[in-house]
Length: 509
Image (tube, rainbow, N blue to C red; front, side):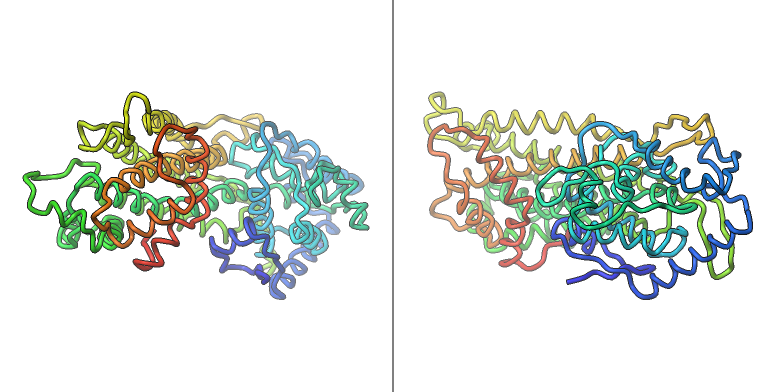
């Protein structure tokens, strides 16, 4: 399978295919034509001696400094070296692949002015899984992701470090093994490689994709909890959701109605004296649904940005013009990532309160902490502590990064988005939510073991069987960390969702 990069049309799923399944990419013939045409125009402007920002001038606050023609090549090397000032933990391989394919997608639009051979070299690196070592921190998300993308580009000129064939080696050694010489970049190529929003968009794409899986998982977890807590299916009645027509709310209710369909457990207490369920059960469609709507909005933003041109200057070869603007500013992505972090944090908030209801005998009517011989055995008591800790951590991580700004480049860049930080911490929220939902599912499966004579809903039963195929019943205390990790893996791999969807049909994200 090969994904062709053209002007438009790249989906979130295609980014995931490259990032996580190492699917190869190729430029379309139309993209090749656009790159060659734009580069020929840049070369003609340079030959004419035109003053063009970033092509024949310095960068940022140094944009007024015109660079002599003899120094233009040195300028390209210097921008990569000087901008490679990243710090902190290194990006994961899937994050680097997502960054690289999005940079290539931007180049395929033909507005950067980069040479064909430079674009092809970066494409080849991605296709052979030669991944630059990139520190995660250092971008303020306004002149694009300058520092991370400079690290991405260093191996093209034989500098920096890469991961290749399971080894960490220098960029120079990587080129030697591939039988290649370092590129000597021409006018404008340094800026064309580093100026854009591709890291924040790459992290955002990964976060949105995982968020959609978590949204489905939250509906599964809530459905199981509702059954074992003797809740009602009335709150899923479509008439309720038609009169408050938020699409996500209706989707969550539809998911949960299908998951719990045919439940003997729910039928067994249809005529009990309880008037209404607690909010964490009764309002789960409203809470989960609001997060679904937020996730859908964030997908739209990310897919627009995946297919956008975010360089400066932008070359318009058809009209033989270059335009200076601010498409590198990450504000759209920054706001979306902050919104997504908040939306996902709420899925964990309500999940942790359901966990409390499950392990608290005064609220559940079940054995304390879902284990027999309480006292001698603590059961799932501390798992709830872990969920509480992660929910509290999320409250801090959900504080928006996009409301912050700090001037850079001698105040030339006097408003920044902090979009890459917003995306990084959103990824942290995703991981925390995975674990909280995993704990709720462990508790739900443990509680279901007590309903030996009653059949749960078709989706609930499918989830329970998939969980128990990996994680045994907790008869007496054991180390819980491996159970939680195994449950997280079932979530992250989407195996749990697929098991449920095999019985009830496709769930709404």
